Image (tube, rainbow, N blue to C red; front, side, top):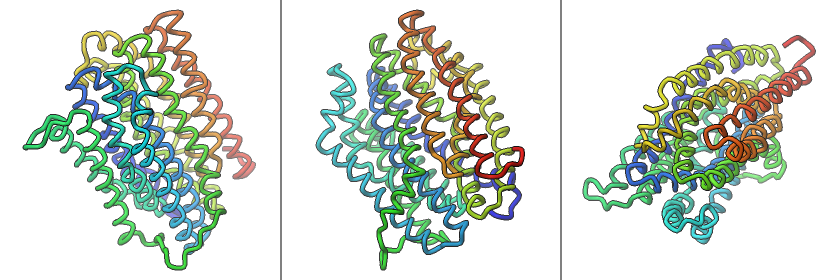
Length: 444
């Protein structure tokens, strides 16, 4: 963290993270590809429950981001014992979060399904998925926790391995449990949920095991452990804006699905497909940003401002290269991407032009995301939260609703241009101001 050339350090740490995140996104991609072969209704149901999944991910990832930044800064200050205490506190709050969602799955799955949609056939499919995905959510929380402890000490390789193991198992189990191969009962959409939670639980076991035996600095120590509310406050001072920002994604998918249900079930199914494809192709940029958090946090804690500025100069151009590549893929191959999900002719007619319109905003979205990660490493999560609100909810959802009324569904997708453009301007301006304030008066 302190001596390796910044470009080499960022790429070395981000490559396993990119692979990890790409593999992680396969959970939803593969589920959707197999579920699409059941029916378009089943595919629409997975798009609807994604709002709930996204909320769960928001809590886990946001807590982990705050924990990661705090651990990196604490280690940069040479306080190893304090880092171990913080890691133990992180395990406590992660476990409590998982317990809340698990109880919600046990007692509230039918009510949540009815909240998502009033269509009786979709309600049943949503309930089948949620009754498994929520009750057995422990895997995703503990897997995220274990991975961030490894990332805090720079070990992104073992973090990647834990994700790959879980994702590969999920991919293998999906067709077996959905369609009933190898003697297993055909469980449909419920089988997709079971395959997902099994993969997450196995990945969690791997991540926690790697920390137990391979993490050289951070260990969970219950003996003599002292719970401090100040540690919780420090974690969520950084992580809460990320939770809010990620949760906005959940609210956005819920609101947009409600808007699109008035158009057709096909529109909802398409938006679910788009969101999964977009998440998959944007994962390299997320990997870069997540690698930057501990690098920036460690060097901020140790007072090495020159390395932080160098990280900025490497991070942004690299992210833009990936963004342009993702745009080219969406622009040149929209039909092929839709065909992966057994898209009907109606979905192809709606989705092909939409993918091309939306993809032109990827460079703007990438800059916004990377600015948010960089600011989080400097201890400011508010920039990430506000820019996320602008691009995912405040401007996008109303823009889609107005666009549908004025120009129909085909013209509504230009709302992405407005939302991403405003968020880009805000995040870049605020991050550069933060750097000037916290690092030095030198030119950035």
